[in-house]
Amino acid sequence: MKMHNDPHSWSDLLELLQSWWRGD
Image (cartoon, rainbow, N blue to C red; front, side, top):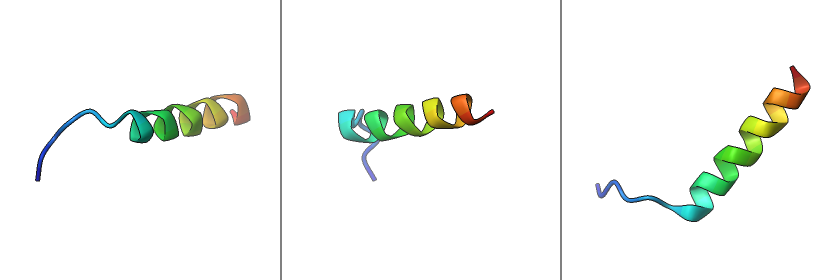
């Protein structure tokens, strides 16, 4: 398993985090 920075994955995570942050 390679641990490289995935822009797409990050974008998804950031979006989810923002959504959760607003939901809180």
